[in-house]
Image 1 (cartoon, rainbow, N blue to C red):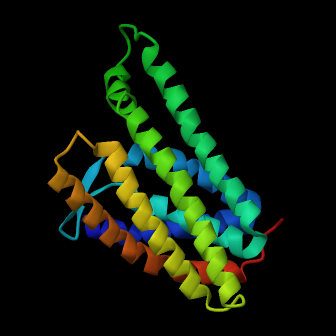
Image 2 (cartoon, one colour; image 1 turned 180 degrees about the vertical axis):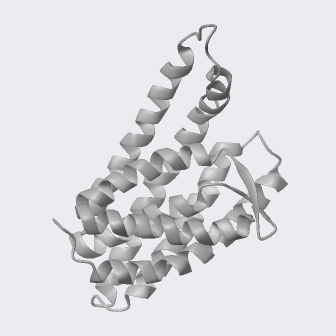
Length: 223
């Protein structure tokens, strides 16, 4: 069941990013970056098994942010991609602040959601802060590597810079996030296993996003 959902979300999420780009142009990618940044920080709380691997939910959605920065870097330059990264950072910071106010309000006798929200949102700050730090590091690293390979190849070999940059950045992201988010909460062996399994899944996602990047290059957005 999870495996079927994995492939379904790959198609749906990456297609939604391209649809946002087609309809709204660069602005659509900025909006997608903010929305996915918020939702990823909530999804990552949930643990699932996919292909026999224990991973955090949200890997597919988070991978779309790397595709987003690659599209922006390729079509609009490094500055546009960095702007998207800072938009994602702001969205994550806003999530921390807003959710803490939400759980601070005392519920009344008619409420049935407080405890569920409290369980999610009180877990969120550490997860979001870890995600925010790794997001800034890995996304800027992705932009740097992507741009460097683009210059070195004279703008050729799009598939190479897409995969090398994303795979390198995802490795950094996975290792740093796991250590910051789960250090002390899970055993060292469990943390290492989470890094290896999450990265294995991200290798597959990096390869799967390449056709969508080529499709994005053919799209003429409504700017």
